[in-house]
Each structure stands twice: as C-alpha cells, then as structure tokens.
Length: 99
Length: 162
Image 1 (cartoon, chains in turn red, brown):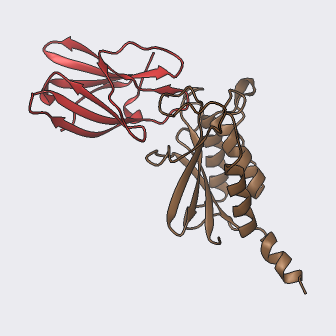
Image 2 (cartoon, rainbow over the protein chains, first blue to last red; image 1 turned 90 degrees about the vertical axis):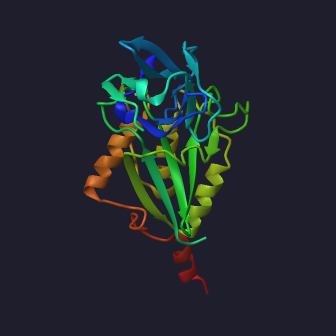
Image 3 (cartoon, rainbow over the protein chains, first blue to last red; image 1 turned 30 degrees about the vertical axis):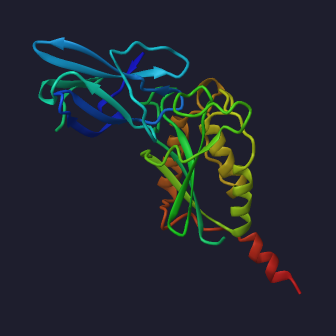
C-alpha cells in the first residue's frame, strides 16, 4: 500500500454534514495501476490524521473509511469528525484540512 | 473533418516519479471540443470490465492534469486514420501499456516517435512524459499552435487529379 504525495491529490470540496461528519471529495492523480479505495484514520493528540490510500489495482488494501461511488476519478469519503479536527497525511508531510 | 488536433499527454515525467506511477492518454480536439482516449486494464476498479472488448476507453481523463503534452495538426486523412485506430480492439497488457499505446498511435498517425521505453523494456508514462518534454523543448506546441502538417496527403492527391 502506498501513500500519495501532497501534489498527487486535489481536494475538490469539504463539507460539514448536518450530522457533524465531514464529507471530503478528492481527486487523486490518475494512475493506470493504482486507485484509492478510501482512507485510513488514526487519532493523535486529539486530531484525526487521515491518509488517502493508494492501492494497486490487483491488491486489497485495508481502509478505515471506504470510498463512495465517484465519477471521473473523484473519490468521496465521509469522516466522523468535524473538519477543524482533521489533518491530511501524505508521504511528504501533513496539511490541515482546507476549508 | 478538418481542423483536428491530436494531443498526447502524461501526468508524470522523468525518474523522480515511480516506475509504475501515472497515466498517459490521447486527445482529439475538433471545433473546440476535446475527446479523451486512454488504454486501461480491465482490472482497474474505475473502469467497467468489458471482457474481450477493447480496452480503449473514452472520457476517463477529462479531469486529469497533464504535466507533459504535445499537439499535432491532423490532415483529413490522418484524422480518419486516427478515428479508425480508436475503433480497434486493443488489450491493455504489461507489454502494451497506456504509454506504449499512446506513443504508437502518434507514431502511426503523424510519424513522430515519442519514446516511452523505460528500464527492463517496459514502456511507462514517466518515460513518455520525459520524451514529450524533450520534444517540446526543441519545438514547442500547444493546442492552439500544434505541430503543423509536413504534408497533407489528402490535399496533395487532390492537386494531382484531372
């Protein structure tokens, strides 16, 4: 299982849902041999550290949050936390979830 | 059918990218409308496994960002040739990747070699992207200023008639 670099992923939209959950729509780099089945989540010092999973097309990769149906390579996930508690973790660093 | 521009694209270029990373594809732009063509393995979760039908898919790359692109003006004959090639039944394999296919189509239609050969004999998007950038450095192109036709076979045939 690989991780994306920051430049490999575009965050298309971030929405806080009425339930308090956070919906993220993201577009990973188009890969012939990989796809994103979702994300892993771990808690660290009160913050949710979210990594978008980059999985080989013939592999099964464990995720904590499963990606929902998407179009044109865009991926949607719903996280249990509000947006202000979320950091995105990439192979080349972390960023706070953009609003 | 005139005024068509063929594009070849990759979203990675060079060895800074992993060997298996990225994707390469083709575009045709006609009267301001761009259609995207790419070769995809049936095993990819983002494509419908169509069994023995062609692995050439249309529209998958519409939201993709290329880091390397090159453009060619097509004659009517070349445009017809391209369209015929897009109707062929082509299978994605490790020895016939998106990059090798895209490069071969450009070579067959316009006669320019866009090399995608990486180590161990496999053809990769990163190598195709690197080759595109090298060609662009020598002769830049864009969608509004594509590489011009050397010769239009269709029109040269017309001139010799009668």
